[in-house]
Image (cartoon, rainbow, N blue to C red; front, side):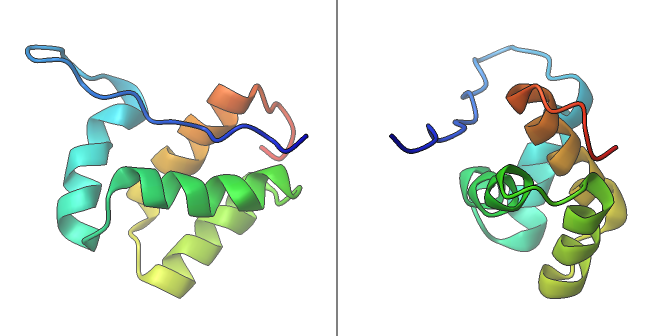
Length: 87
């Protein structure tokens, strides 16, 4: 059995987004990909055992993502996966 895909919940009308999710809309606009693509890319690395900052640095180097966006994305993924390692 394969790992289930980590799915980004759709924001509901009027919902106030907090924490890392509050960055997702601006990330889509700035980097030109749906947030689900970014989650899929980064989650694969996290699931493979990469440490938090390794994934952050990879997103910055490979895709030109800003540090704050990369850190928020990886933090959100690790939180959803219940991943306490790799801080």
